[in-house]
Image (cartoon, rainbow, N blue to C red):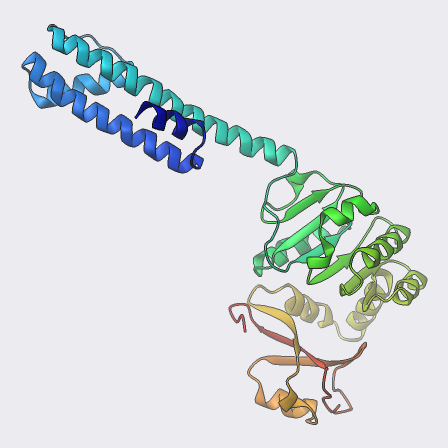
Length: 322
């Protein structure tokens, strides 16, 4: 029995189970000790349990004390059993809390995702709110950035370090990622990160966020599927807002609403040869456009024919996980 308790305290099982086992032993000894004490001292069972609880918690009021030899033996057993075990339980809880805090300080907060995940490399002003949206839609996310982990949502696995370092990027296991967003403080950082990611995971689909149009062209030459120029995006958005004052509100409603999500779905063989307008008429979700190779068609003024390997850009309710 003693060796088993030592094994439990030292870590034979996890902290939660150890605590429950030790508390169970304490409860058993307290109840059994109270009954035995009541018989030895010729008092009621309630008084015996009261004495046992007072003794186990080291309160020691002194209103009930052992007067017989048997009572003294029972008191010694209860004290030598319950007091150390309760101390061990509190030590386990304190240790678990301290370990959790230490893991957070050492940037080891969340376990690395077991399945596929979205990889975000570098830090940009848009990254924090974007992380919140990805987490809200149920995506597993890994962030590689040299920022304080306290500023990162606890649901996001944070790899702290220089994202332009090969060692740091390898720690994020990019070869297991489903998609990567590459950002940085400068376009030069983004270019370096893209080159290193290509070395780590040649088939990884990437989206790069840069500032200058020239940088966007350079990143495309490196094989990045989608490249977004922040300057161009802002310029086009503002231009459309001037043309149609509510265009900005439409974009915010489309991209920022929590009621729906945007997905890029692979077309099925049955869709090949059909026109985009047909698919729009038959689907329950909102088909925004068709992705053919690296080109995106909205189907405005033309009605593109779906080919094998194309993808649909759709908006659908957030609860829909199909």
